[in-house]
Amino acid sequence: MYPKTSELEQELHERLTEHGGANARAMSATMIALASKVHADEIDRWVESLMGRRPVRLLHLRGYSKDGLHSWSSARCALDRQERGICFEDVYIETPDDGAFQGRIWGPLVLRELPAILLWTLGPETLTSCEYDCAERVNLTIINGSWDLKHYKRGITSYQEAVRSVLQASIPLVDLTWEQLLPLRYAMSRLFDSSYAQDLEQLRKVSIHTSDPWALQLLKGWIQDRTKGRVIQVDSQLDPNYPAFTGAIECTFSDGTISNLEIHNPKNAELHYRDGKQLQVSLPDSSMGTILERIVDAPVVDPLYKRAI
Image (cartoon, rainbow, N blue to C red):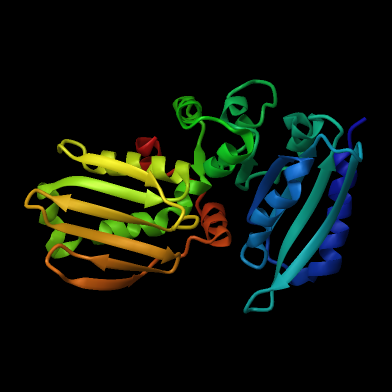
């Protein structure tokens, strides 16, 4: 026996009125956070970074729970600058098996005519199967490639092939790892902006250093795509000296000169140009809350990600 969605809807309405009052901002989207119960708290921390940023209905779908079948709802609100409530409508569904993942269970709780965004943590292979009927019910699916590889012990090559299959199946997909690499990609682009754009013609080798293997693979694919048509060697090396989503990139040119960048924290980069010029640049925010806020506002796919894959 699964939870009655009509009863959960009624509970949500009562709690939202109680917590947000008549001045609450209208919901922006439904976000479906799907995970095994053992990983649920970690996944919830990702999506809760949206609190105070955008009002969303959040479906917490937890499979393989030792507590058996369990469902409940709640509402939480924070005030924005206009003292309007930015609220979370929370719906929790736990099942002892994978029943919580079935689209027919949570589908009726999706807000109609608003974006539905699925945070998928079961690996890309199951996303293209007919077992759960999830991707067809949403506008956009989010994965986290680095997290998947860490928790499911896949090899890089097989995981990349699985992601490629999802993209070829025309499933709109966003990878949190790719989004969190925005500072590194931005800093790399700054090495070749304005008066340094002509340096690309003399670029012969790029060396990438970072500590995350999936991030390294994506950066390598991105650089190979952006330099397509040129004979350029791209080397990559796992380097524990650079924590998550920081790193270093070195560019070697035909005359032996070098330019490079280093990012030791997500906010700033040091750029060293081949002519000796040095520059400190501020980097775009790549925190989880900012990324999810951007996705809720514009649930679209970055075409550069598909090309990097």
